[in-house]
Length: 605
Image (cartoon, rainbow, N blue to C red):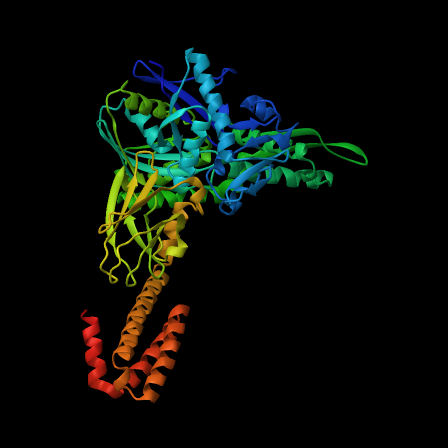
């Protein structure tokens, strides 16, 4: 039987592994390296070139080389504005607002670029194993939303792979770490890669891996550190030569390459020398650049980025109801955890030195290979209990967010909840699926819209609409709505093009907590507006029922004030609603027994 491979599709580097004799092994590529740069050269009619060869072309053909594409996969252009620093290729929006890449007047979806990387991983495995590879497990950051997961799965399919499972990177790392454990442990996986950061807390008990919580930042990674070092070198070149190097793409790429090299070298050296001969030219001829960067300067430079790593850790511990002392081990995953300052930060925060027993570049792919072995039956069953990082629900009338699946719920999961109509004889309902932590629907991430038609005519509040949310083992969401009376049903699998944003959930949760009072005020106002709608319907019914018993001048006054009430309801003006209601009650009070008995009868219906 052909092997099933595990692929760590990384922002900076990608890795492929397979299972042999119950043990995961990383496969070296054609160049003999176990990591392959996630860089793609698009050379016109020729097939894409992936890896170290493509990366070397960043200096000579920067306009054709794509790197860090994982930061844009499955995202709308408006969502990724904070990730554009250091990106040398144009990013545009397609007809649906999704981010696309322009190369030589051609537009490419990020999943198409990612597919080229995955195809390289597939080829690497086929060359090494001497067989055709069809099936794979692919990893994604724990904080990837549904759109990004769908796009990653699509990339695998474009690469000719049958994607058996999408698995979270920290979960894969814990799986690789825990497969040989002979005791139960609570583990923190600190995953700081090239483009994203997340921290996941898991409990490993025998063959069960339960995710207790996850938190992170989809716009924080080693690329951001590279950008800071690049800016320092760029500014020093300006000072030394008086020339702005950013006018030439090849020069910019040389500086970026030097920045990345300096970052890597400062993980083992206390200072590095940067030499860039012939970096710029002026009327006096070519100008050379020499400079020195110390680890102390470097750590001061990146301190703001390191500080951003702590809040997700605090949030993850709070959500899991744990303290650092409750953990048995901290695993470092991702190339950026090789930075000594990151290791010190982790050790100080968790009050224990992080484990160095695993290779941070390889452990995720190894975990994916182990999961592949579980799926195909090569290994004994391992139970993975992962979680969804943000709450999921729908928008109710009045713009209120109703949660069906709370954040950090274990997946796979199926939840059903009944809703009803808000007007008499309503024939359809719009289902707006959202993800986030705010009570105000408009402040959350929109995932999908669909309409359920054919609702059996009935007074409001009578029809029963069952909404069902199902998240599968890949973390992909399916939503359905069913009218219980008629049996009509509509459903949607949330697709990447339907996403409207991809905010990091750490910021979403923090913002929700900060604005809880604002949200409570919003809910209070929405309830007040809904009460006003009910009051308006009651007064209209009173006027229709007793028109012949009301004085013409009072009937005219009621209609005027009803118009004012309806205008204020539409505007959401709570103060205006209260004033209009008061005036209507004053007029109705002239028919005290009639008006209040009708009001009581209406409310008891």
